[in-house]
Image (cartoon, rainbow, N blue to C red; front, side):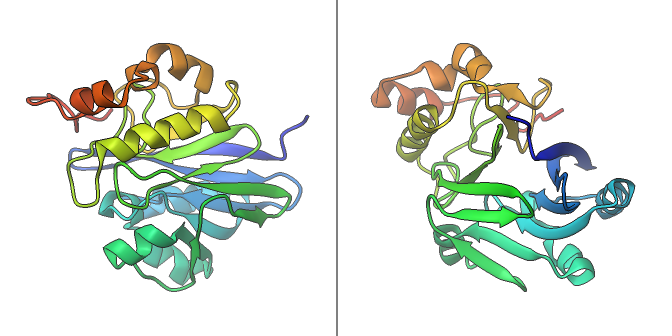
Length: 225
C-alpha cells in the first residue's frame, strides 16, 4: 500500500542537547504535523516553508522541556492543535493554547493520514507514542540503541517494561521507529532491527529488565549525537 505521507526528521541543537523533531506531511493535502518541536524555531519554520506545508497539529510524546519548548511560538504563528496524553498533561500540569488530550488507542486524522495514540508510560507517567501507517514516533520511550531513563518524576522501569512489551505486540516488524534522540544510529530503523539489536527489546523477564534499566553508574546517558 502506498504511504499517504512523508516524514522529515529535523535535527536540532541547544548546548549539549541534540533532539529530533519530525515533520509529517500528508501528500494529498499538504497538511502537516510536527512531533516534539524543540530548540531551533527558525530551522523548523524554514523546513515547513520548503515543504510548502500547512501545519495543522503538534503531537507531544511527553512533557519534558526539551520536547515541548517550541510549542507556544508555533501555536502562536500557525494556530495548530496540540495533542498530548491526558495522563501526562494532568500529572505534569502541562497546558497550552489549543491543547487536546488523548487517551490510549485514539485516532486523529490529519488530511488523509491517521495517527494512533499508544500510551507508553515508563520514562514519564503518561508518555505516548504515535503510530502511523509505516512508522512510530517514540519520544524518549525507545531509542534505536536503548530506552529512556526511568528515574525522574513519574518514571517507572516496571511500566517501561510493560510499554515495550505492548509495542512489540502492537506494531509490525517493518514499522520504522523515530525516537526523540539518537546516540549516533540513524533514526528510522525498523522494529525488526530493534528486536535484534536493542537490548531492551530482548529482555523478556520484568525483574531482569528493571534491574538492568536501573543499574548504577550508567555512563553517557545524555551524550546524544
